[in-house]
Image: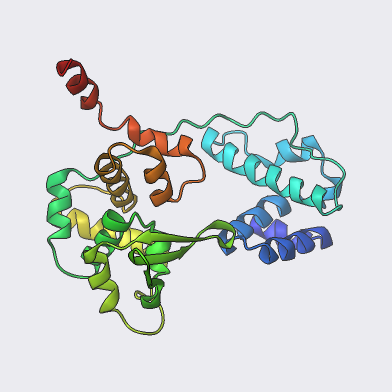
Length: 266
């Protein structure tokens, strides 16, 4: 269903109630927007949706990753609608959600990391936020100077995660220096996460002649923290703000040379 068709169909009262509920419990605006779009794309009120409606709204040639996002969003919405007493069934039940293969992390090569951190300008500061604090593009774009707080263990960045959950990330001296010279009011950088990622990638390409993604800075943070902590998965999980250590375990596979060193040391 196209955007025009969705507008013609209109938004059902149950969808409006769900949207209000998601705002109240603290979901991110982008997440709410995506869930509402998927739900309205069915073309029928959710309480009347059937398994056939779910399958009909999914393009037959969609990639497995697209199907997974689509079905996961709908499944989560119907669970909430059932909890709210709006729906008495979940039409996504029995529809197989394609599996997801989580690839290995791609940290920045050491020479590239050195070149990027050693450069000048705003994009270099963004690099520091990713490499030394593990920030995502969305975190960096939303950062304020007063997010730098003092704790009984030192300076830290106060971040708001999913569901409004607060997290403290220890602040490296390079991070502290950047945040302390930022504007006192408003975000440090007035930019959207998407624009930040695009601009950073173009800057990195011009600087080191490699196609890189901003998220690789976060991968670098994780792999370095994992090694510096004595390969402690729990510390790495907490600093990466992962919900499950299973997500963090991919960093335990990143350095395959550890196995060779271990055998050589027997």
